[in-house]
Image 1 (cartoon, rainbow, N blue to C red):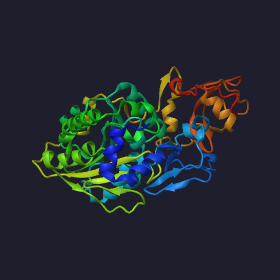
Image 2 (cartoon, rainbow, N blue to C red):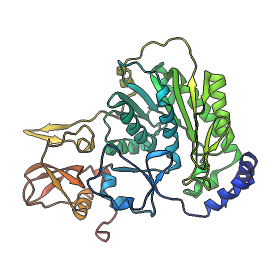
Image 3 (cartoon, rainbow, N blue to C red):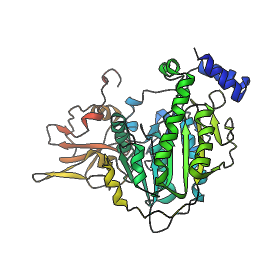
Image 4 (tube, rainbow, N blue to C red):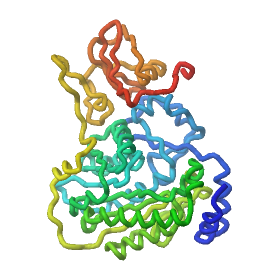
Length: 416
């Protein structure tokens, strides 16, 4: 049951008709959606995508007709797509509409900070978007303050495979030392979680007006802490998965008026997306998905900051930066599992062996494989032409190099 205080607030701000449609949507299961990796094309169709329909605001987004068990699709583990709510794709769509307004010197990469990045949906969306717009000329820093969530973020970044993404785990105030460093900051800040009501009953149980006020205050602290790191003329993309005005428009107005900037609202004619005073609101019942708020602010002009060198990132002690190809162990060069998934991997560096679905799942389960016809030594395992990882084939068996922390944990024998 939805909190009465929430429904009253939603009705007052958006009208009873929208509130009623929201109620009705909450009684139905939410749709499953994915975002395709444009730089990991498939050699054959993935059954998961059968009859999928496009997400209106994302060229990579697809809404699925049915919810599969993603764990049992090897292409999910290859990074061919990322499972993400369709509404959550809107903030990066807003960035795409404004990217052409950035004025970045040609002698350096575009610098972007994903401030509250776990589990990695917006990070991977940003990585694909930046690579499409700027080629290899970008740096994306994905930060998550909670170490346990940062580890998940790091794994998802590794699977997505873009080498231009750096993962950090620091408090937002640490970025103040990188004065004027970033051209864009995407801040999908922690919120009261009204957009999680259908997916997480705890979000309903924990909601209160006091929680909304507490979240709004915390969001302002986060924004103020990171604000010095955004250069003059740079873009802030602010988003939440809540519908509360205190956490949305009110905070965006506060940023513009107190920290110094201009609210920007590019044209948006996507069906069901509501315009607000400062941004855009996606509400279940009007759009597929769980809901999202997004807005953009251009930072005002100020004193020219000192030029922060890229090496300054080392002070943040990155958890992941670039891609390591491997390590020498005696006379053997042992390839790193993440290199196989990286866009920087040069095909042909090792012999390749295409797996069927059953064998691919056994590889991802970290089972011992026997591939008598495969080449000896280190071999790249592929599925539908996409790399999954390495084995060392010694003839009688293959030593599985798939990371222990990413192995499929469920019993796959009854599923294949």
